[in-house]
Length: 145
Image (tube, rainbow, N blue to C red; front, side, top):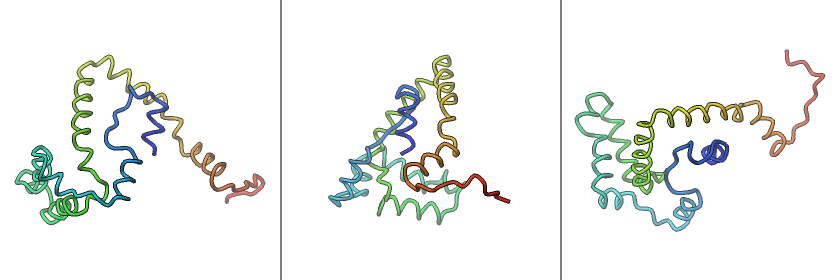
């Protein structure tokens, strides 16, 4: 949703996105063939990341029950289909870290994003929703007191 609009507005070179598109995710849901555990068991890096959630470092700062529940949700359901996006995430993360090293380029990207952020104001969004979806009439003579 919003990430697509942001990418169109700021340019793909000024945003970092990763993962499958909505069409791919919808198709996966329709086929009913997504098995998060097979991703977990088939990718050592993903397994390490998931196991970290209930490892000693996380247990030191987090709630054991919540971390265990999160891990089991990911392995049993993963409603948001995060595991298929893992490789893409790692690739994009490496790109971000590389780009941050070039401070001039990084600052330019940040400024482009800041300059274009006004488009996403709630006033404009509500006006667009009303025009395209709600079709409410506005009585400017009414006082909202």
